[in-house]
Length: 314
Image (spheres, one colour):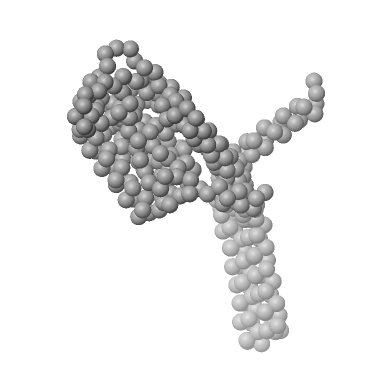
């Protein structure tokens, strides 16, 4: 067995888990420091009592000096008081020194853990933005060469449903047939449908959905306008804000992904981009679910800032 390989694996594991290790050591150190401080406090009374006794002897010498019964000069008094002060301070330093040292080391471990995690998060954000930009450019090329229908098919894995086509009346009053399409969720997309348990023990759908399709239509349009106003007013909106308002559980990625006002990369506005089971939500019927394909900008943090922070922490 290669000893260097084993040690290399151990070193890699320790480096990988260093934030957790440092945080754990820091927490244990804080607890240990508190215990040591409490134990030291029990011994502090004895030091204070001994210091009081020595101070009383100095005061007695001062009284005898005033009655001329003892040759005890003011210089001697000042020297004894300084000696007593340093002696008491030294005793307390030795008593509380281990606790204070352990507390300082524990805080250093916790701060080091934070610094490592902060550095890794910045690197992760930069990598995510590079991957996101590559994927966005890929979708643009697919759309330009094969059309939006192909892009939607590859993104959502849409499949045509065999069965009776739905007949609808368009805005011009003409009758047309829409072939049913099965949409699959992808990325930040969500299905606006009844909230129901899934096979993993969680819940899927929205708590805000109702059976009346027109109400869902008005509700989503109103929320979309609300968040566009918020985008202008605050300058940024994260995905979790919208998830909460629409009745979906929040996600970890939803804390850092969203929209920025006048972003160079985004559309400059928030769109839920709703789609029905037949590809067009406006012709939906009561009880239909709606696919929401948000035009999310991506990670809100600026890539250049992330790189600067990463270089600073290197």
